[in-house]
Amino acid sequence: MPEGHTIHRLAQDYAAAFTGTAPRVTSPQGKFSDSAALLDGTELTRTEAHGKHLFLGFAESWIHIHLGLFGKVGFGAAPAPPPTDTVRLRLANSTSYVDLRGPTTCALITDAEKDAVHDRLGPDPLREDADPGAAYRRISRSRTSIAALLMDQKIVAGVGNVYRAEVLFRHRVDPYRAGKDLTPAEWDALWNDLVELMREGVRNNRIDTVRPEHTPEAMGRPPRVDDHGGEVYVYRRANLPCHLCGGEIRTADLAARNLFWCPTCQRQG
Image (cartoon, rainbow, N blue to C red):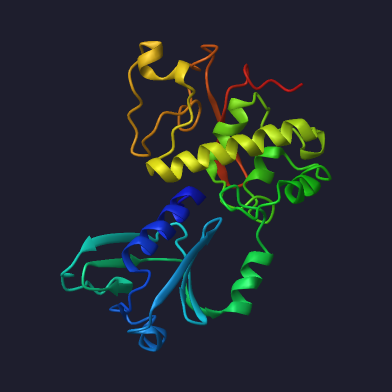
């Protein structure tokens, strides 16, 4: 499932290609046809992201998109080729087109319904209106592990498995540590790091989390080879040596996802 930086990047890409234009809106697959017909030829006025939710604004309506595990978005230059019958939503104008396939959610919603989505989400490190204190108030009262709490979109929106594992490693926090045991200073450091890492993710359209002194060039090690891309400390590095201590990276199931961590660098206490 894409992490929050990908959705914010998509919001920017949709805006760059279609804001201020009145694109053709179609649903070749047919599942969004009625709503597409209502929006066809209507100006796209704004785009927005909150966590893993994308919103495309048309007049007083919004298209709400959640990619889920299988959703894909593909942009291209006009003229658009004939769509396949897997395309849930196509926007097309004189310069660009974009196809959406396989989303968990693609729905036409009102302002009030959009507000309800925001209300159930936690603060997003990439949003200007984010309140990290709201997240910490919930974290500081919880006996749940900090690794599980970071994946709870009601507490922090947009953080996924990669950022969860990497930010905990970067701050030497045991992933099994209870949220209530995290100090305000530790939370501030984690939050501020998430803000910077995820902003870089938006800029580069990939996740890189290693500090300059730990890059392959600096350490004289081979670059990472993985379809995820990006240089990381622990994510998908189970049984490999830690870049810092040389110990073995471990993995376990936590919050229905694979957790990765270094038990030496992230020792409890």
